[in-house]
Image (cartoon, rainbow, N blue to C red):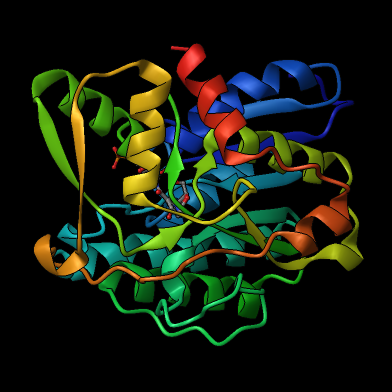
Length: 290
Ligand SMILES: NC(=O)c1ccc[n+]([C@@H]2O[C@H](COP(=O)([O-])OP(=O)(O)OC[C@H]3O[C@@H](n4cnc5c(N)ncnc54)[C@H](OP(=O)(O)O)[C@@H]3O)[C@@H](O)[C@H]2O)c1
């Protein structure tokens, strides 16, 4: 550890986003020390463990990728979802304030109810429809209440070559079946976790106290449905599998998903000069990297 360089702690680093930050961090080793922790090393719902860790290590920036992300299971594992997404976020916010650490916390489009019809801006009214969405909103509120030096980034439809996600599930199903049914009445924009990882390290590298607050991040382009996204995966991979469009009513899930969750990314692009790639280019890059 080079004591001359600021240190970035990435929590929940074994997940999709944390793994992509690990890859992108290779471009920043001259400027920063990195510490990557996972659920076993540093459980964010364990306040004492966090306190001991921050006492033992000088942390200048913390990027919190740790979360309970099982959207449907959260409907029954409610306590666990809140323990991690609300109280874990609150723990980190409190400890970051004590240690004067700048915090970047990741949240979700599921804090909205899906009734919007144009890209959703940061100040729009939240109204989650699922336990996961509520627990993430509570986490945001705890961060805002307890940490002044915080940036919260809501993102949507995250995928990567790490972990499990829609792109990998579609690829597996397309290999196993001759046809699949995919919901066509939920609109959003996907996020390649590598693009978000690049954006996060750009934000750290251009940190300004007056830019703290809420931001939205997803890939750019025309909003799409999951059916459109699956069709693009089929086209890019030359899969012969037939993709059929179905409605949300045809595919009931324990957690209610927003019908429209397109996030506006104007604020983050302007504030940090981030040029966010188009979703099709990002999907192509992700598939090529497999
Ligand atoms: N995935 C999406 O589509 C999506 C969409 C919008 C927003 N987001 C948000 O984006 C962020 C990153 O998501 P992701 O896709 O990278 O999720 P992910 O792949 O599920 O990664 C989350 C990581 O957090 C770990 N974790 C769980 N409980 C923890 C705890 N108590 N302490 C420390 N680590 C813990 C998980 O470990 P285990 O796997 O061992 O439990 C996992 O490695 C999250 O805040 C998520 O809410 C995700």
